[in-house]
Length: 291
Image (tube, rainbow, N blue to C red):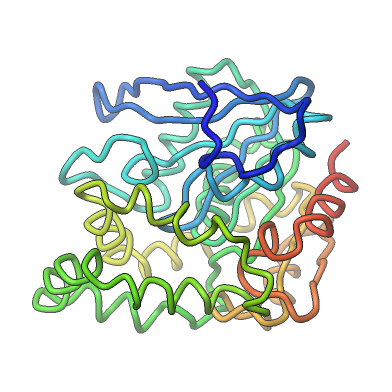
């Protein structure tokens, strides 16, 4: 099923995709949504916190020319199910991503993750290194970026958390402010961007998912640091914007040291979402890395 909003306002005429669903075994019966396009070696795309497959609408047409691309909505966000009281740690999300690969017949893949999704991608690689040919990490959450560490403590507070869950959906101006901060140059914000991200946030349970992720944030970062030696051998591409306010660009060099075969591409003047802000540059960098 095609959806103009979910994939982009002006995809190339020859571009086509399918909206599909898989049903997980754990948690039993929960459904994950994903978009599928193209053919060739598998490439799995993992969005950031409170993002979804919409994030890749400007990348899908290009990347699907050389790969079988799977753009997922992680459980708890996007248009996937939001079962209550779930474990949304990096490890739990990574295990569900491996379930997704099992269900879709993806034996191995290149794994592209951004922000929170980048951390999940690294844990997937640690759990099943034989299934990940290469990692493409776009400003991935990592132990050397202090951004988010203090905020996660605040959002884990028993008084603050319910207030956040109540107020966040009711404050569109705050949503727009923080969305704008994701870009190095606000003039480069795509016209469909804010409304596209806002659409699934209207589904009940969306902000509760974010709070569940925040509760585990600092513990998850410690676990992530401990498993990095397990994936040091995997060829890796790091992509960052020099004006990223969400994940510190200075942490890129320390993360790069954890891999034996790693290239860092830094986009000057770009923020946290290079696949939206400078999509042609982003697509070119990814295409040059892929086999």
